[in-house]
Amino acid sequence: MSDPAKAIRIGTMIKATDGKAAENIAAIADLGFESLEPFFWQTTGDQNLAELGKRCREAIGDRDITISTLGMFGNPLEDRPLDRDTLEGWKKCIDNAHHFGATCVAGFTGRVRGKPIEESLPRYREIWSELARRAADRGVKIAFENCAMDGNWQTGDWNIAHNPDAWELIFNETPDDNIGLEWEPCHQMVYLIDPLPQIRKWASKIFHVHGKDATIRWDVIREHGIFGKHAHVFMRTPGFGDSNWTDIISELRLAGWSGSIDIEGWHDPVYRDALEMTGQVRALEYLKQCRGGEFVAAA
Image (cartoon, rainbow, N blue to C red; front, top):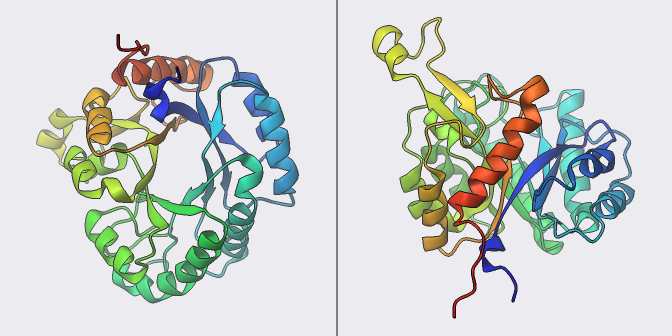
């Protein structure tokens, strides 16, 4: 019998911008990850994505590991050289997702720099309406990560899809069924938003989940507030932060959600550098337990 627990797979992100995605996969392929998200930062460079997808799948071999989502992170709404590279990277990822076995491409919406969110909407609609059609023609979904990248409602450089009020605006501009969210609790907790109720409201728009958590330092907030010199929150690897991922996964299951939770590492202030993979493998084990542990077939 197949393992129905794996309707929600637990995996990790794989750096792909450096041209070593296949090698990076091979290095961790036997650690127990069930899914992978190769991701690019601002540009895919001169890489042949069809060939890269083939090499990534060869690195996986016959292991039970899937690639459901590619990541393309940058600002495709602006017109600097790297912004144009990001837009072209989105097109390449959409066109070549099937070579990886992926059905989703995720990243930031982009933003008109330094302007309130509303002023990005015309450019957002222009770019993403076209990309949504391109993706739909290829059976691909588009998922926006809910990361503010230090922006807010009034100003920012990267992304407008970091706030539920903004989600209402962008989904109104692009009501396409294949445009949704790459959701995670961390980026909501950074702004003191309760993430759990969002699952109940937005589950149908959650196409992919990032495994990243946060620790809110309430003692710092009470003494210094959230705009002082002391950090009021740390981004954490799951298992080391404040979220109860048993509740998160339960809410996803109750909503009928299936897909991958891919750990986003490289942010934890403790489990980093030499301890990076120690933290990620601990998060993998923790999330599998939050999913319910080993599958036991009913009698």
